Length: 432
Ligand code: URA
Image (tube, rainbow, N blue to C red):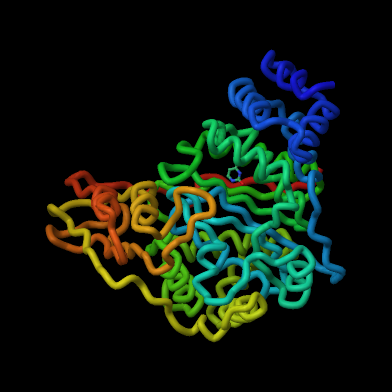
């Protein structure tokens, strides 16, 4: 068999078998398949799709292409949550300490922000000294000892995905449902989580623009996780508007700290606690009402904030910083309503504005300015008077387009804007 034959078969829209897929993935991981061959394969999948069985085989082969974090020896249920990426989505930073404080061990592998989306690892680095490059052994030990850890996966974890993702990124093949599903789930299966909750975003700030596409992706990932013997849950949630009120690393961490200190309730707190309750219910079989009460009490009592401090300290940061706030950049620009009316706001435009001001990155490996922040003063569906502040933008330097993008993210019109439900669909939970 040659890599060429696998590409040819997929180009002809023939269903690949397990042997062909494993062969191809092995050649990707060991470097013997050329980038051009990976690109051709991805483009063939982009146009011809994959059956669920092909996608499962691809995911498993990718998950097995590297070294997996060892499962901790301690008994218990291990959970992971994954969001497909969005703007002002800091659910991980709320959910992990809540669950860990409630005894559900959270082994959370996260990523960095790219383009308009923010990344949990960048946000965590707002805590000076905090490490997000834990080795698999350090990760395992921390999950066991503290109950939660958030780290990036090493390049040895799923090398086939790392190579394929880099090629997809420059060949316009990122937005293929089977390729996204296998990429995300290969990293989940390479971890030891028993429960996986997938938050699939839809809307202009997400990969999947429509709820229909997001649901297709969510169902495929649930089927892959369930087939692999993991309890897999998925939600389809709205990412037309930013989830929280703050965008940018320090600003988003400040918002998380306000939520965990009981000082703020908004869509971000609602969704984070919704996901936490779903995982708690799946972990210990309690009722929906009991799990909702437990997660809310965990925040009210301060237990979640204390757990976040422990996690921060365990990863090399100063846990006492959860009781303070992180600084924002020195210059402030106010986006004002040009007329009176109903406000709409684009997550995509605000994410781009934050990145253009240096708060995000265009290319992998670039640094981010943690102090860049956009604080929403009005949200989708709110009413504003002419001249009222819609958002405050904190920045150190503007190359000309960041502030303009922030302004363009808002529209104010005389048409009343309907708020969309936050959770559009929820399903999964069965093992095969
Ligand atoms: N996130 C991933 O990890 N992989 C994709 O393909 C898309 C988003």
